[in-house]
Image 1: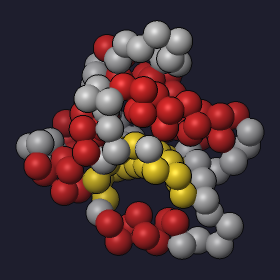
Image 2 (image 1 turned 90 degrees about the horizontal axis):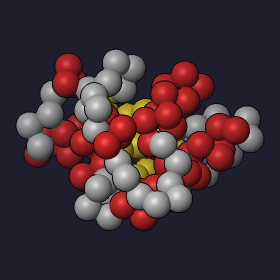
Image 3 (image 1 turned 180 degrees about the horizontal axis):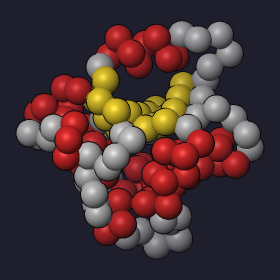
Length: 116
């Protein structure tokens, strides 16, 4: 499963939904890839996910750790560039990739893509 989060702290409920679905997929044993685009890319900066606060929302930092251990986390190249975020600024293990990589992931047989 590929989950794309297009919002971060600018739309916390939508962001939390993406993270919650990604965590549920991992818990169910589904190979999971989380893509952070738009303002969501900031959540891949050290300490940012830990500061996310939404009532009844899971801990986004814990979900990032889970996905880095059992899935993958990718930050959109253009989104990072627009925010002057370099790959070296990100949490270790988070990769930076572009649209062609996203397309390749979602075109894999049996892959489901969800965008939030």
